[in-house]
Length: 119
Image (cartoon, rainbow, N blue to C red):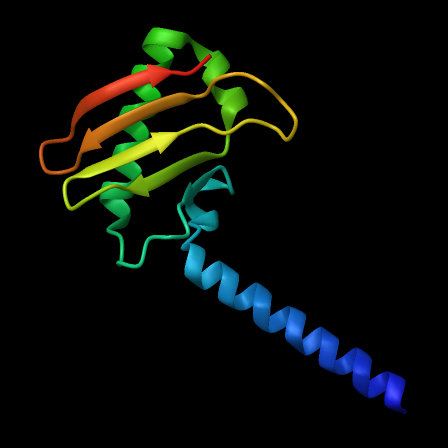
């Protein structure tokens, strides 16, 4: 009986942690098929139209410059740097050396202020 209570308690704890993690990370999984993530340190509500446009602009410019190989750097992570600048950057697999695409976009004008690719 004690074992059943312990297992039930652990399951409830894990469910609670998973629910909180999804809410705090503001992952737009249904919109972007788990390939785009809003950084977990962002506390403000995000306009989904702005979020989508920032990703679109970054991807469009990256493909022009670096080609379709940028898609191997998903998921792309969106970070809010301040009230007008958001960044979008790729990710690397664990234990993999190399660079990822990076872009900074002014969300008031939707102009790219910085675009690079690490090495």
